Image (tube, rainbow, N blue to C red; front, side):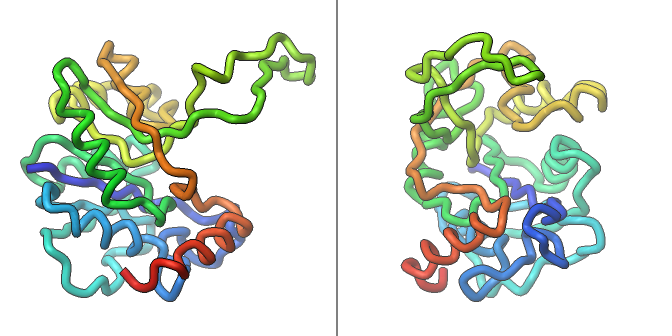
Length: 226
């Protein structure tokens, strides 16, 4: 059976919130609970560990769920939070990692990423969206170096699902390397693992700014309470 880790240790500074991002209310409940409820409803997921922000020792009241939940204090970096949650979640393979800041994740996307990592030779499968804007590589002074071929470019999201052994090997590096990781799949790539992308729907957005929060509020209103 699979296990899931929710990274929820972000500060929420860019939201201008007076509380950690995962605890900001959207659509009538904390941001964290939208994705937690969806993950808990996926039959393949047996347990969920949530890496909480500093000062938050317990999960918000999430009502009855169909899997085991555990909360752990998050670390100083994303990868440290992942490592702590992985240690706390107990046995299970594969391991799904999701950002609490993506409240619009769907069960269909979760199941698609889980299915992709089960393919022979795949160490990680990641939700991603194809890039539609023209992307230019520029120097720090703003001078354009070249235009990149957007046909081969993907904007990486979560959920990301990993063969557990591959993830544990990738995380077994020094803190300086872990601090560089903006997503967990990069660590697997760095360790020589094979990563595949799974197309994600446009609404799987990440809440970072007040505008993102308003967009998510509108989209979640159409879902009702999870």
